[in-house]
Length: 240
Image 1 (cartoon, rainbow, N blue to C red):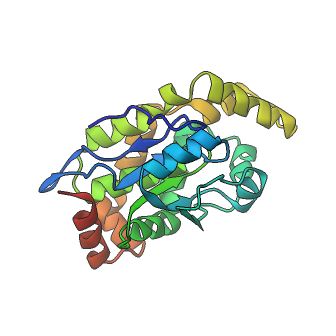
Image 2 (image 1 turned 180 degrees about the vertical axis):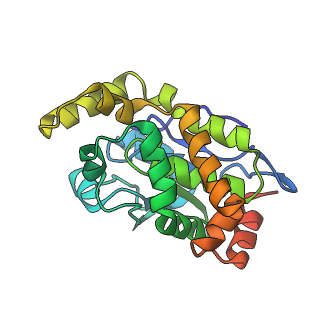
């Protein structure tokens, strides 16, 4: 497995989810990608993106986020909006820390997370990429659920979540803090945590609660509407 970001100009957290050991083999390289937003792709970045073979982009952001920073995709990729929750700014206003936010995403938005996993299982003619703004919280949850559903080890999944913090530090983090200030949002230590951190304890706690309530990730997905044949298709698409 690799957690290094791919060199696509205008992104910071774009990764291939291939190479994880899973039930019956390993996840395929070049089949499924996760990323931060694609609103800053340069001309070179669009060429690099097209070279990945991505034909479908699932945007997990809310309507305001998409309108404010629309993806700049090459013509080879189709955009599918699929908001995980109605308003990212509303969660900021709730004064949640990263631990509470991560748990909330899994426990209060299981329906939209599960629908995203079902979308990943749809057969297509090329690769799929999904993303939110940072590619760490909503994207991290969809990635974790998809990987766990095909039998990737829980520790590997949590590590994949945690490395986003490293990829987003520096230029990406500073620019997004400035965006929030431009929206007249007071940047408190809590906001700084929400913007840039992915502590492994956050996903560990959220997954533990999912498992306590449902027994397993697959049962959680089933309870939120993912059919068994979709889980089978997902495994067939992702594992070789």
